[in-house]
Image (cartoon, rainbow over all chains, first blue to last red; front, side, top):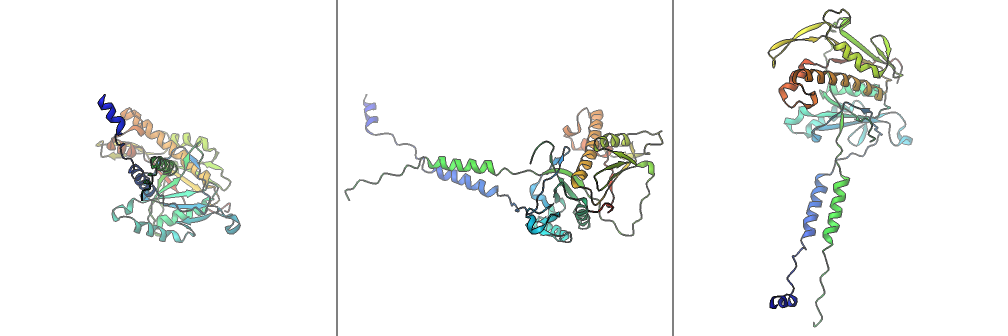
Length: 155
Length: 192
């Protein structure tokens, strides 16, 4: 009995949880920092076509993107498909420089492993795509990926 | 001074708030994995390079015009029949004149020569062809070759190509079933 009496007199100290939020915040910041996608705000609409025989691109850091499609802001840029590199519109001539820049940004060991992913809108005409491909050939960026989504899955 | 100490603010729910935020970020920042059809471009050619003559029977010509219509070896075709046409074309028929020739190819991993088809698939499109159509054609071609790889793998190892884990076996299959797709520079007939 005496033991119970003692308890009622002086409560056992609760575990101090005041540092729990800090731990969780640390986790939160960790995820916020690591999952920041270097997302370039798209200036062109790219509804990529559907396909069934698609593969996943394995190393995201070794992929550089070329976007081709009709501009989102039609009033300003018109209806014709344009090329977007990084964050701005570009012409076919800029591809060589873009490839060189992408190579510069990678480790020396990884430079020949870069895949260029072409995110092309399905309504785009092949003319501009072929020009881009020729330009990529010239700058020896030979690994390419025609971005496509799995058939039956809306993007 | 004799005032009672200010009671501590209850921070117990702080963790819950942080958890909510954490889960929100975990859910919304799903990394979208890019998927697509992976191809390798041919290396740049020197200007003085001669055209390589390929016998007519060894080439399956696929033409796509600016209206997204398909011509397979001189006949109007449909994308849906393309896969079977390609598979049929790449099949080995040593005695049939209308099929491509075959040649022996040394597979180092197997240590012997194996007959493979000399057939080449030539894909040509117009500058006005839509990209959607082009991908459909590429997809059908990929499907044909994937099925051929699967068949070969089933025949040799009893498992599908996609389920092969041994790098050596994958290499052998890739050598036995090459993907000879040649892309010509597009023409500008229909206009962009």
